[in-house]
Length: 102
Image (cartoon, rainbow, N blue to C red; front, side, top):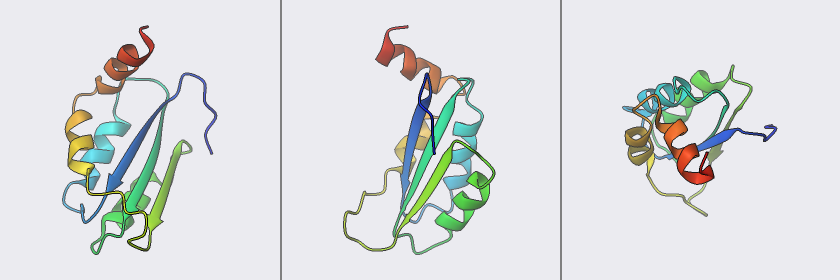
């Protein structure tokens, strides 16, 4: 799992997002912030969202990916919001500065 120091953890939840999940994850993986962890949660997708994400994240030591098999505790489809926020390579740095004031 993760060790937390100055790590910024990006949580991505998706449902039926196979068309944009690769872009979303690549934009997070190319952030300029030096220490990023990713928690990816697939919320009962009926397409290849989880397969695509698991291939991309499988070799990353600071990534966890989870498949929610049931509609219990459903998280909603908010991947598009995350992908918009992370489209700039400095997005995580800006968010860390806002949260920490550093």
